[in-house]
Each structure stands twice: as structure tokens, then as C-alpha cells.
Image (tube, rainbow, N blue to C red; front, side):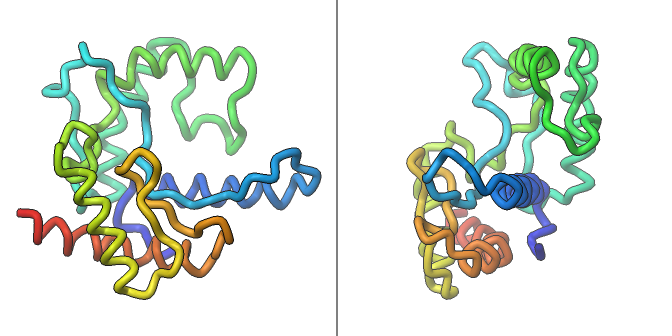
Length: 187
């Protein structure tokens, strides 16, 4: 997809592709819930005791290369705690003991090393929900039919219940522009 400027969204795009691939490969799926693309933040929420000062912070204009560099301490921490970092799974999802190791290592490493989201999208920012609402408004003004703020008030949901691929594709393409426009207005 054309949404390559922001690595977080590259992760979302990869997740959406993986979901789409798994949906296609498992026609006998047991869930009837619709799949909705999201511009959600990656990583879990840091614990209250974590020192945010030592963690890198992503920016709205962070490149894929910059984000990969930010992830190196996190990946190293995962390895130190016996887990394979993302990218070392050969395209497969970890399962069983591997998944348990990864989850345990992530609980330790994420609050210390995983990059914080851009301030505009950070749950610690009291204006983050306003930012998300304004980005949705901008996307709608740019012709995206099915877009809304997610249940947490921070994430952008594309596609709606109709799983409208056009809204997902165009929304992913136009989201960086809307984020920049809205950020400039909020300054």
C-alpha cells in the first residue's frame, strides 16, 4: 500500500495483510465478526513504574528506517530474555512455548524499550482524543466513507462493518496527510 511514510502504519498494513491472508486461507472460520482495519498503536501500554524518559518517542513523520533503529533496544531485550524478536519467526506466528516466552519477555521489555507513540496519539496526552476526532473529520472531508474513532477514543478505524476495502486503502493512503494537517492546527 502507499502508506509507507509511517512505520507504525506499515505494521498495521502488515497486520491487515496477515488478517486478510488468514481470512482467505480459513474459509471455515468460526467467527462471524467483521474484520476492520485500524490505525491502532502497536505495543502494550507501559506500566506506571516504567521510565518514559529513557524510551524513544515516535513522531508522526518517523520513517520506517528510524522506527527500526528505535526498535533495536527492544529486540535486544527480547533476546536477552529468551524470546525471538519480530522478524525472526520466518513469517510464522509464535505458538505454545515460543509465544509464552515472547509474552513474558514483552512484559519486561515493552515498558522499558518499545518506542512511545507520537505525542498526538499518546494516551497520556489529554488532547489525543481530540486529535483522533479531528483526523477522522479530515479523512471524511477527503472522501473516506467508513472511518471512525475506535472504542478507546485514540485509534482510527477504517472499513466499518461493511469491511469496505476502498475506505481502508484510501484511508491508509490519506491518513498521514490528515495527521500532519491536524497536528499543525493543534500547535
